[in-house]
Length: 452
Image (cartoon, rainbow, N blue to C red; front, side):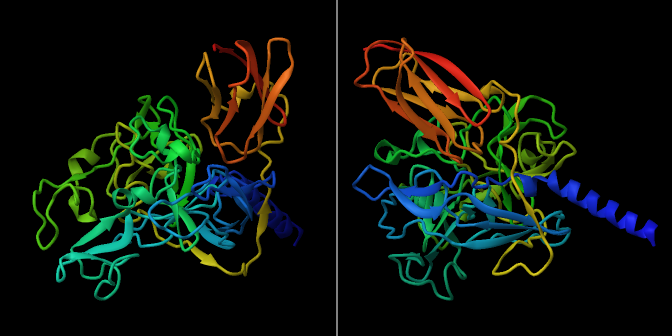
């Protein structure tokens, strides 16, 4: 009996240790600082502080599942949504149940659907390409969605041309490329701000600046940014070129391209109002492209080695084009690679362990750059200094500005889950200044010149 009890304890210890290193448990952005959401209400360009806490509230796990409690509220500023969307980002107060050990679907692939198909590490929902609007061949007009008549049989039912939300709803996305559906704030695409793209296709950031979940960096492997509803991880746009972790860093490319069509059978003409790419059916999957190392499969992923999964796992990627504009199918889809088993639950009905995020409690690292890649720009500066971290920021980062005499002239904070902070330097004199960046255990300093 003693031997059996010892074996039970060892097995329980093994399960606990394994779970504590599994990224689907450890990878979430837990709210350890009490940070809350913020939003813009046009025409004011001053952010409004919300009452709802941001990021992940709690992570719990059992022998087979992970439970994530989240409001669905990011720390980056949301809104305004300038297409007439009256909704604001509101707390979803949800519990998401995901598989601890995802499995490949060896049968017919499961199609993605409207609504949540994944969860970003800050608790914000991932939607697929669709927006519930389609082309009605009977009336020769769009149907479904706000402002349109209902589609026969429901949104998109028996319609040949289903609208792609990313080009169609661009005017309604905020700076972070998100918007709410009945309060459920979500991204259809790569969650990095419009004004960080190489070619900026929306001017919303000009008045209502925000930062998004991470900053694209073409020189390093992109961070883990979420998990699909089959439990497999979602990464940003860049990864190791080869699946075995070799070949340097490359942009992961979608294997979907526009069909070579000039007309749409029983659909709208291809024109400036409805260009190629406006509808899901404008795309085709190219198996030839998918055989190239840095191109993805029909689910927008591949099996590969990543920093978090050194033994390899199937991964989805938030695809962008050469200009860093979002590229269909954007993150996951149009079908899942794995067995889709994630769901929202109202209660947890099995024994679970609470995972406590201790990633920011280590000591002995004096240089913040060992944990964060930091950009300070422009340098030299004039009226504004921006400080940006490219990594996923898991705790508040204090940013201080000192003049050449050592006097502190300003202080601000990059909030947990955000990436950028600004100093207004219009009233400062020309000269050399020091920007000091610190979190609980690390500190770095940078010189910057102001030229008036």
